[in-house]
Length: 164
Image (cartoon, rainbow, N blue to C red; front, side, top):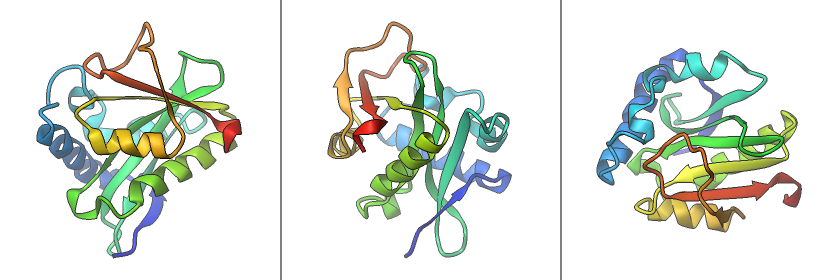
């Protein structure tokens, strides 16, 4: 299967919400304080397309143009000229094929074009494969910031984009 990267469309909303929820359920993270309960989870396209200057969501789609995963980006006020990587999830069927790395590379390039100088993300220690990916692509673990979006998350990463 070949994956293409496209900007989110409304038709992707239900599939992406399902992918995110299934991933979180698999790791017993279907609890408050995670993306599982985000108010915009069932309408990601509306949320990310609402402010294109500060947000975007890239969908990984299969040969039939069906979403098999994706990654979001939104402005992060914790650090100067920083964006947060959000909701990076893939269907189990396409994991371990380099698509997570491909999505991160694309989101980094797009973040630079949007004027961001660094990236931040929140994750959880149960998401072992994600932690390995973030380390492989140059993110550095940092202490928990004072204010976090998802209070259940227990691992925090940062990357300067000028390091690319």
